[in-house]
Length: 147
Image (cartoon, rainbow, N blue to C red):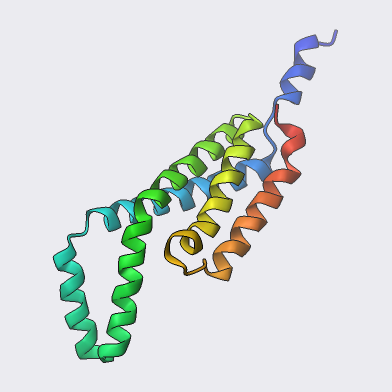
């Protein structure tokens, strides 16, 4: 005799591909959260010391560029931290097969790509946009498995 609950159990099973995507997102978002926390808590005296070190090694012009990049990163850090947490939350929800997680994740990734341009006038690296788009598309392929 067949068990009627067996079919329902199979229907709620998470595909391996979705599991792998979620685990990769957990790792990436975890590193992003940690790096944003480090940037948030770096003292400004550290940046000044770095400029002196860079100037000695690379020259004054390159040192100013690098410090400007660090300053922009420190301005973006609070926003990127929140968006990375939102991205992680979306991935956790998708891991639980909740469709709303896809929309949270997508929103966070789009904002992470455009935020540097909106705040600092310096657009995101193409590699970051590529990975964001790739993961959004790969998650979208799995939407049929989410409720």
